[in-house]
Amino acid sequence: MLPVFLFIYGQLERMPACRQSYMSATKEKNMTPEDVVSKLENEGVEFTHDPFQAIYIFPMGDMVSGCFNYGMRSEDHRIIESLYDDGTDRYQPGFWEKVFEDTEAVMVIPENRQITYPDWLKPTASQQALISELGYEYVPF
Image 1: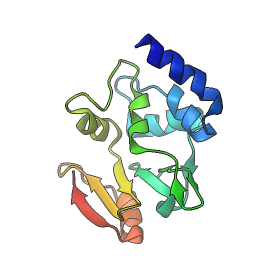
Image 2 (image 1 turned 90 degrees about the horizontal axis):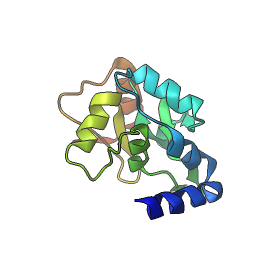
Image 3 (image 1 turned 60 degrees about the vertical axis):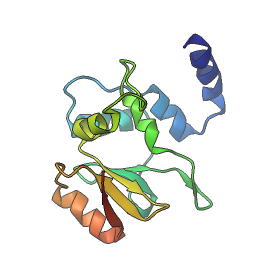
């Protein structure tokens, strides 16, 4: 683990700003979706007002940017794992379900023109308005 940490730590200076900020964000226990957004904003995570640039849509309509440059997305969905400072990562069973439970976010997959979230998650009116604007296909998670 230490060599990976040192490699990642050494790479932070060379990463785009939007990726660096995610690397330092942490998820605290019992955070509301509003707290998650606030924490990410305080960490400098890039948000967008353009749903076609978004990779996550939070319940209040806040959207995490995919950091698009020349039509290519430089930010990946798995970056959300940095919300967890307890060693939780995407390789553990149930990771994505935990992300949906903790954030109540809708995941946008712009390359496939799809939106995904678990059946139990009911998008808020704000999320639903953005989903409708996108016109993307819903794929159950």
